[in-house]
Length: 235
Image 1: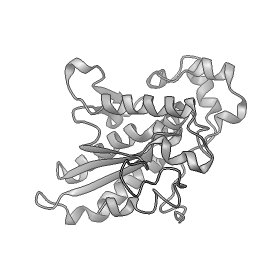
Image 2: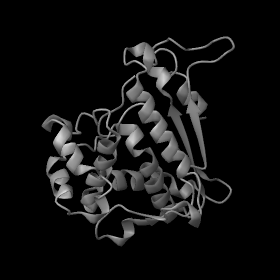
Image 3: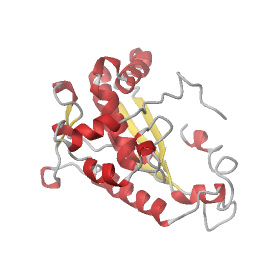
């Protein structure tokens, strides 16, 4: 199974070397969460090109989202989200809610780095177009799904997954006592200063191939075991 490039597969990566250098110099106040100086001193130049992925580095995956949003009029993220919601906007009502499903993995760098932000950005666009008549669900594949593919269930993968899960858990709780209440996705554009007043996902599911009863998919390649039935679960 393959995604159709330009329609189902929309790459947003690119060379972020210059952007990271500017962050290290103190520019882009909304990006100071990124450990620019540390990465510039430790990583090779090739690691700063996210066009083919984030190299298992979640910070790079997240930075790719912010890079895309920096040129808002050309943003693939915003334009694609708006277009997808507008396609079904007339069919959405209080009695017929829009169901938005975000699928990803906790194991790598790209999906794990951007899944919370994608939920927040999706909510923002949905709220503008269909008011409160929508629900956001997340389905996230756990590391064990990839062990049969030769990636291995190493410490780094488990650490990334735990960190992502912890961040996800944080953004499933809303309240003044829990810290961040606004995320600035753009240095100047007020439309991308988003108040965090709702949980990232209404419901989230962690998907693991192993089960104690019969029909466990543990040890089966994800492409042959876990991935094929996933779309049926969304229905």
